[in-house]
Image 1 (tube, rainbow, N blue to C red):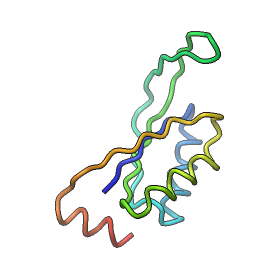
Image 2 (cartoon, helix red, strand yellow):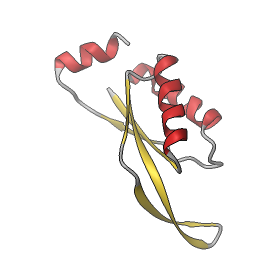
Image 3 (cartoon, rainbow, N blue to C red):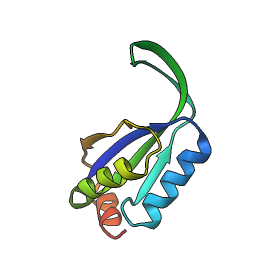
Image 4 (spheres, one colour):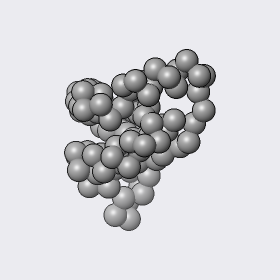
Length: 99
């Protein structure tokens, strides 16, 4: 199992990304967390932005396809794309593989 994290600046865009990933069968589930704050440096400036965080649940076999899809479809010029290996219960992993 892989969990891929990304962030986006508004809920409508978060929902658009989440629905597209699930409908394309690239993710079994995408959780959108409540709005939070990101603090980062961009082009030499300290920035603070409200963002929504997406946790994309997928299989190891689809990880590269999800990353490529995000790189092509995310509206940020350099989107956050963080991939973590994860372990889940056997029942959850079985469900995940059936997506």
